[in-house]
Amino acid sequence: MNPKKQNTQFDAIVIGSGITGGWAAKELTEKGLKVLILERGKPLEHQTGYIHEFTPPWQAPNQGLPERELFAREYAVQSKIERGAFSWANRQYWINDRENPYQETKPFRWHRTDVLGGRSLTWGRQSYRWGDDDFKANARDGHGNDWPIRYADLEKWYTHVEKFIGVSGQPEGLESFPDGHYLPPMEMTALERALKQRIEAKWQDRRVTIGRVANLTVPHDGRGPCQNRNICNRGCSFGAYFSSLSSTLPAAQKTGRLTIRTNSVVEAIDVDPRTKQATGVRVIDAQSGARTTFKAKVIFLCASTYGSLQVLLQSRSAAHPNGIGNHSDVLGRYLVDHHGVAAFGEVPGFEDRNYKGRRATGILIPRFRNVGGQDADADFTRGYGFQGGAMRDDWTNTAALTDDFGAGMKHNIARPGKWVAFLGAFGEQLPQAHNRVTLDDSNKGGFGLPQLRFDVAYGENEKRMAIDAGKQAEAMLKAAGAARVQLAPVRSLPGTSIHEMGGARMGHDPATSVLNAHNQVHGVRNLFVTDGSAMASSGTVNPSLTYMALTVRAVDFAVAELKAGRL
Image (cartoon, rainbow, N blue to C red; front, top):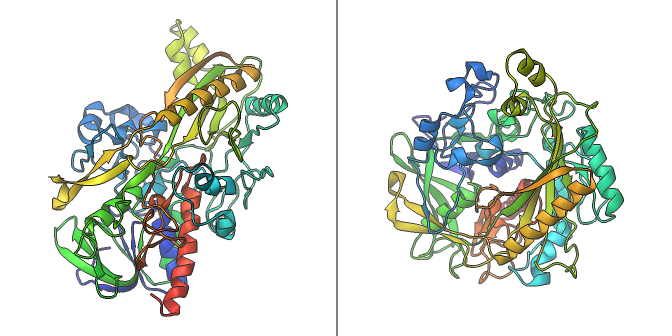
C-alpha cells in the first residue's frame, strides 16, 4: 500500500479511514474523483487480517485471560475500555499507549485504534437518527451555539447511509426519535418483551424498542447475515456488521480511483495565504520517517474527533497562527461526550424461558425527560436515554457464585442461571468553553509532534442528570418485577463513552464556530471536517450515523462546488 514511487497529486485527500473517512472515499470516488486516503495506522485486510476471529479461548494467549503485565505496560488506557471492546483477540487493532502518550490536566481516557478501518472495526454499531429536538436544543436553552442545520437537512442522507450499511431495527413512529430504513429487527428475549409491556403500561411517555444496529439480519449487498456470535470487535469475515474494511473501502476500490496509504502520520495541512485554500497535506512515514507533501483540490479531515483537532491545531502558519479555523480561539473547545449510570436487577418468573445465540444488540428506551422543553420536576437541562437488556447468567457467573464442587458444581453450571435486567443511561453533556483540548508543545510525542492535553470534566448539570437517571432506571426495573436492584456508575470519566464530539463545531458565525452548515472550515472553503469534531452538541443517542450522514452530505456539496469552479 506504500509504493516506492508515489503519485503526490490527487483530486481529493481523505485523512482517516474509519467510519467517516471510508464514506468520504466511497462517495468521492463514485462521483469521479481520484482519491488518496491517508491512514496513520497499520495496514489491515478484511477477513485475512482478523487473526483471532475464530480463535477459541483455550487456544488464546494466556488461555484468553487478561495479560495483565502486558496490558498495564503497553495498553494502560486502551485496556480499560468498557464493554469488553479491548481483549487478547483484538489488541493488535488498538494503539500502544506507551508509544503514544497524551497529557491530562484532568483525568481523561482517549481510546484509539491504530489500523486501517479505525474504530469502524470495534464500534458498538448502534445506529440512530437525531431528531429536530436534538438540533434545536442549543438555540432553545442557550447552551452552545445554534446548529446551522436541522433534521430536514439530513433526512435523505440518513436514508442514503442506512440503505448501504444495513441497519436492523423497529420503526416506532416517535417524532423525537425518527424512524429510518430498516432491515428486520433482532428478537427481544422473553424478559425484554415483559419489560416492554410492563414499562409502557405504567408510563405512556416511554417506549422500549430493540436496538437499531448496523448488523445485518438478512444478506445485504453481498454481505452475509449476523451469526449471533457477539464477537464483532474481533472483525467479521461475513461482513455482517458495517465497517470501512467490509463496505465503503471495497466500494471505493471498485471504482479504480482510490489509493490507500497507511503508516502515514499527518503533520499539517497547508493553506495558501493568497487563495486561502488548502493546497495539500504534509505526511510523515511512520516506518521510514520520510516526509512527503500530497496535493489535492479538496481535503476531507476524518481522523476522529481528537485526531482531527490535533491536525487542525498543528497546522499553524502566518495566516493561521493558532491552527486552521482558530481565529477566535474556538478550536478545541466545547468538547462533549455521553455520561451515565446503570441499574441492574434480578427478575424471577422466567425460569422456563431461554434463548439461543449471542445477539449483537440490546434494548433502547428513547429520551423521555425534557422532551421539547423543560419538565417541571427536572433540576437539570437536556436529557438522557437508556440502553440495556435482559438475559440469563451463564456458567461463568454461576461457577463463581456456587458453594458446590465436583459433580454438583458441574450440574449447576450446566444449567441456565438467573434472569438479570439492566438499564444504562446515555446522558447529554452541555457544551462548555472550558472543556477543551490543546497542544502541549513542551511534551513532544512520536515524530516530534506536540502531544494533546485534555482539560475536560463533567459539570453539575451532568451530575444532577445522572442522579435523576438512576432514580428512573431503578423505578422502571422495579415496576418490571426486578428485585435486588442496584445502581452502578458507568461512563463516569470523560472519554469512556467513546462518543467524543465537538472541538470544531458547526455554526453560523465564524466567531463562535469552526465549520459552516456544509462542514467547510470557515475561511478555507476546500477543507471539510465531517467526523465527531463537527458536532455542536451530544444528543442522547449514539452519534456515528449522524457523522456518516454529515459526511455524504458534505461530499455531495463539495463535488458540486468543485464542478462549478468554486473550489
